[in-house]
Length: 123
Length: 97
Image (cartoon, each protein chain N blue to C red):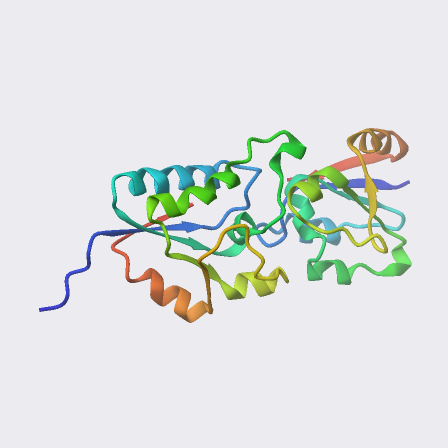
């Protein structure tokens, strides 16, 4: 009997942080699922990798800095966070993130990891 | 007879910046603001011919908010006020967004 997939949600972030609410929306859903103790994983690809870069400060451009809320992930047991190595290389960004437990996966492993989730929401 | 190009999108996400480069003329000015700051290390920059004498400028606050480092050798750091005066100093303005 194929091992039934435990119900799990993947949030695929592909947009940069400040110019639209995509990142904030994804964060809200992650925390809601976390508060109901549902299994949720976060994936960062394309311009979404910029949401993880350390040293950002939204208040400089008077934007509410939702990135700081990423620190709450451990309280919600969100510890499966993946980022696409190809996207980092394209933007020549170092793996210097403002949260821990981020796993950098190559493109193939990243895609493979995504398929382990039943529901995938892309932002 | 120079044009001011205001680039507001990341070239990893849209081809706005690539289109901007296609219509670039001698002595034009490019200002990176908002998500345009993500282009400061994009390979498209290498396609700009130095003979065209293009000025590259960036709004300092928008880049530092995004933890994007600015290479002083290539980019001039400006503020929003400077951007306003730039719109007067140039003959026309195109916003790439």
